[in-house]
Amino acid sequence: MWQTCRGLFRHLSPDRELWALEGNRAKFCRYLSLDDTDYCFPRLLVNENLNSNLGRVVADAKGCLQLCLEEVANGLRNPVAMVHARDGSHRFFVAEQVGLVWAYLPDRSRLEKPFLNVSRAVLTSPWEGDERGFLGIALHPGFRHNGKLYVYYSVGVGFDEWIRISEFRVSADDMNTVDHNSERIILEIEEPASNHNGGQLLFGDDGYLYIFTGDGGMAGDPFGKFGNAQNKYVLLWADDVLPIFAYPHKLGKSVTGGYVYRGCEYPNLNGLYIFGDFMSGRLMSLRENLETGQWRYSEICMGRGQTCAFPGLINNYHPHIISFAEDEAGELYFMSTGVPSAAAARGVVYKVIDPSRRAPPGTCHIQPSRVKVRSRLIRFVPRETSNGAVRLVRPAGLSPGRGRVEVFAGGRWGTVCDDAWDTKAAAVVCRQLGFAHAVRATKRAEFGEGHGLPILLDDVRCAGGERNLLECTHAAVGTHNCEHQEDAGVVCSHEDPDL
Image (cartoon, rainbow, N blue to C red; front, top):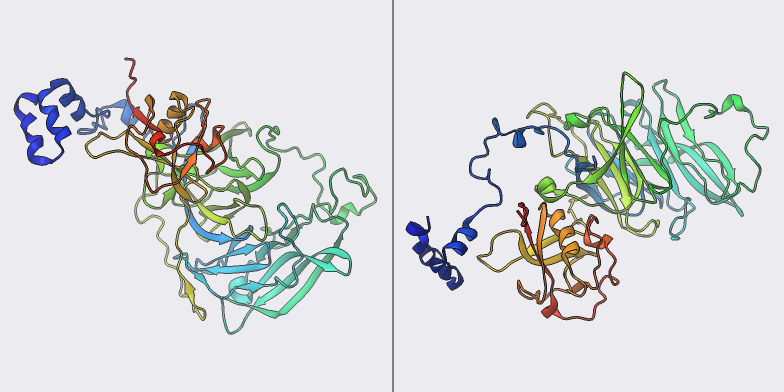
């Protein structure tokens, strides 16, 4: 090729650096080479390396399932619950801790007028970690016909704190608004402390409403030890029922219960119980062996490299996992926030996506019934770029896998200073972008200066196994003592440079 095609560069590009390759056979061939030997002819049917895992959930070397996410709703103040109407409309309703419930249409547009607003009655605060507030919502199994729903929220009664479970009905004039005058208080329980408030409401297959109240106590149980004279016959006790799984505090400290996936779009997830941890931010899964009755644990990781490189997909989420939910089609969602405060509009609803295998086209087709809308619609606009995401910016003419490192943190893109920058940090970046090897960590703005961007990271020190640069030790985001002349970069490769 060098003999016959080397003169083409000057006809294809004005870049004189490319023209210079005409005189150097080794550089010319290296520039045109591809790391992916199967790029031009994938040979899927005969190459085991390519076809052995087709249609399977992607897992990394440690068995961590690699899934992706799709942003569904944002700007929420501690989204504590999401429910659907089960009426064929495929609407869903998201509740905020402050006492507002919003109605969303299948296209993810939100009605400007709240579905329910009990914010004046709800007792909560802007303190991070405050467990009081609007905590649960359940629509009656016959909601399509009777319009009944049930809510669980904290209230102040004089100087005391109570939890209240109430019934409401949907307005006769607007299917997307609750008749606030229809409230019927079903149950109130005094809470001696401001935490341990429970909050889950669920209808069982038996048609009964189950209320999860918590113990109303606080750390150390100062109000009386377990086993006092309560009527066991109207309560459900764990007693001698063992958990199907337990994990140590090094994995997390607060389970956020999830769902067994029974949706249609992602067949590989069928039967997988997906849950999380509020404190550690881990997503986890369990799958039952039907022969032995044992449950196998797998951690869920966000897909790296090209796994989530599709329009609309992201590979990161806010760490405080508050709740899980299903839509009317059985697809799985979870809600999390970057700041666990009822006053911080940092909550997001995510849909769980398995990019490795989707159901055949047409299999999961839905036809939502018509929804009469009497409120202005607010179009959904995604906001979430993955916190910790990286990209490589390179001068024209250079091959992929090399460039100036730019990182997304705190809602903006910026550069990384090369102080302490080494191959371990480069390995984190390369692996995040889907490359197996870090060839070199570059310094002194080798791939150009990031003028116009803030310098976000400095003094980055990585062990090499972190998921992104934000997990490495570094100066506070935005704090630095360098200029863009010290912008860091990397050279990555799919092939081992030592072979």
